[in-house]
Length: 110
Length: 112
Image 1 (tube, each protein chain N blue to C red):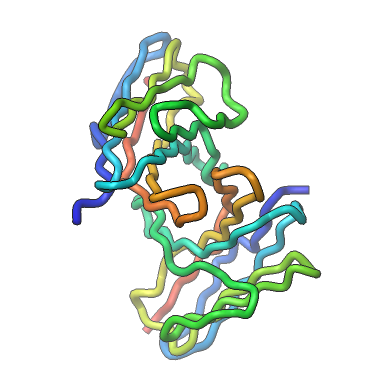
Image 2: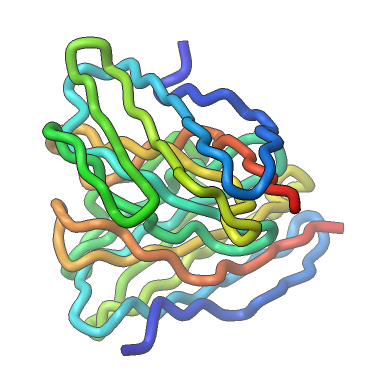
């Protein structure tokens, strides 16, 4: 089983739609969780950290369920500029390295 | 504030050659991480340096090595290049172990 699993997509949605991505992780010792965004042929950029109580940043909401080892990202009112690959990332306790999912591609169309 | 900078942007080598990739972290960041992003494989962790020491390495052969300098910049060296080493190599830095990592633009290494 892969350490971090994501649906590769692509998710094709119209502008204004709400879209949700899910991610599961296998290592229960995982300590920190992040969503990164990666545009085509560009570097990953931190979108948001994911906290146990859930957190929101504008149109983006992240949720963490430690019992189910599951992370989600909700994007409301999708914009064309949201088109990118969204990477689910976990950090294990005691290690500073990150483990990346392969990403979920989002395509927002006019 | 300048972000993580990497050089060169592109590097073309042939099999058997050696490649050196460079990374300058964000000012004040002491930890530097190297990742390989090969087509279809996602980001794979290569190496982590902190305060000049190698703290951890991923599941890569010894021909992948590096170092961190006193100014916290870092080099990644890949010896005896193979075709499958063709990938985007990304460097990231962070303020500390619990802080998010910020990535540079990457070096695209092509092996002919």
